[in-house]
Length: 125
Image 1 (cartoon, rainbow, N blue to C red):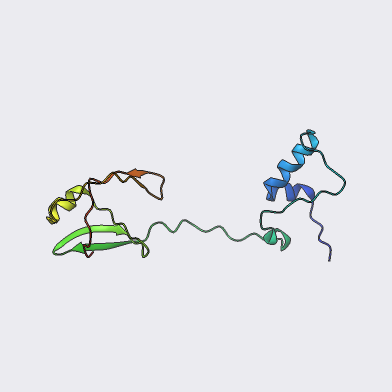
Image 2: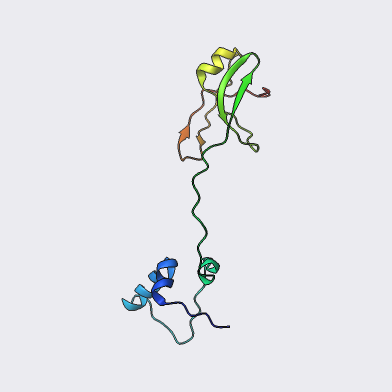
């Protein structure tokens, strides 16, 4: 089986090829007689001559939460979460006692940092 794809299309679809070709042309990379180039990206969509449809961002899946008789509002739903963050004002409103001090800094998924005032454990949410 032979697949014929124009070189321009390959260079547009797989940027690593373009970088490799530029290095050869600029003599930064010597091409030996028997060199193997590792493919690190999937190319099946290009071979089928169709690209998958672009989908819109689904956003964040949030649920309304309440602790006791207090309705806290909406929180990000994460079924694997073992750490739940709540604002200090909500914590004080709930009257859960005094948190244990901590030096933990949480790296959140959006690359922001959260420095908690303290930690409480075994609170059913």
